[in-house]
Length: 452
Image 1 (cartoon, rainbow, N blue to C red):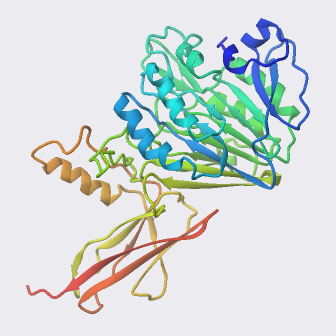
Image 2: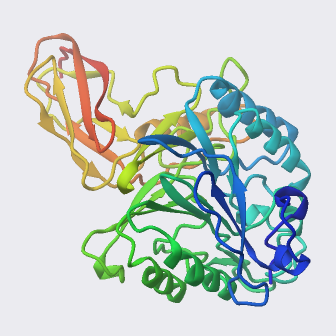
Image 3: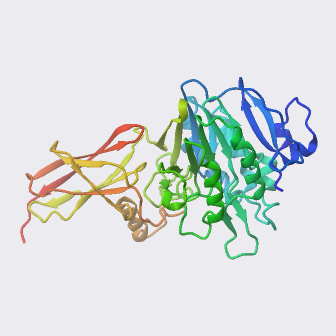
């Protein structure tokens, strides 16, 4: 059984048997909620309850959500501070933080630096382990997180607040010696804990599951095990308000688990696969401040998310583009110039970072009527252009190149008119965000005459 609880990190004034501290899952209960009695240490899925001051209370409260800081050197720690944590210091309204794994990139000596950077934001943190937080010399799944336990704390634990209940689940199953070194899934003792804990929770509150590897089925060797997914679905079925947070993929996606997938409810289960704080592993050309572009393979800029938890099970999500004062929500790409009268075969592309198949995205030119854009499953042309610049460069443009562009799940296209007057024309794009409402971006292109 994994060592769930770091005694130095979670010890309270109450007297608890050492076996309970070592084997029972810690559940923090925020004041002024009643503190339940601890279960017997010998019982499957036993729980050690502990007290903490209130965070998520009132009508709504905010939570910082970081995917994959994934630092591998002191240089990366510096990027993480300058790109993510320092710009947030004293400028956020969050009262709690959740990180979704891969705090480091197989570099456990950097745990203290990452923790310190996050601690500067002044909120309690719930840290999820990732596949790059696993001990590199681990010979079994049970013994694969010794460095994480020592430096960070337990790998599976929960927090009960006035507004929501949150649970962190280590879902990286290490498989030493196998073709796939790890796979997504949960251990039997984690299921035993969930079977004991979930029935004690109020159903009207939001239930948030934080994990590293996405719960959604993917065409990948490390995809979450199907039998574990169905087993978890069954445990979550009684809850009308559930949100899954995951990371790992270094792209940003919205997954909706449906009845056809085994989710036993007509209302889909929403999983937000959060983009990485490190983006594409701190790669790409550096800006004037010396921080790499870090654009992800789907064209999403690196950054962080904010989850607003509301009373009666509600929530809102927002992605924030790192180091972007405008907090841009839509990245645009359009040709700079087209021939007047040419067949309208060239378009404007809109990468709406929080988008999904249900999103409404529209564009217009020169203030004309808004027209729908068509969602396309292809690579972001802006990142393709960056790939080409890297290819054509005679010398390295950065330490690591930007990632090779891959099809984005949140890209739209609209054909640009060429029958307008010669000169510059303004393109406006808008998307209707589930939580923020209308978000916009704009750019321009020119039309010019040409002779055969």
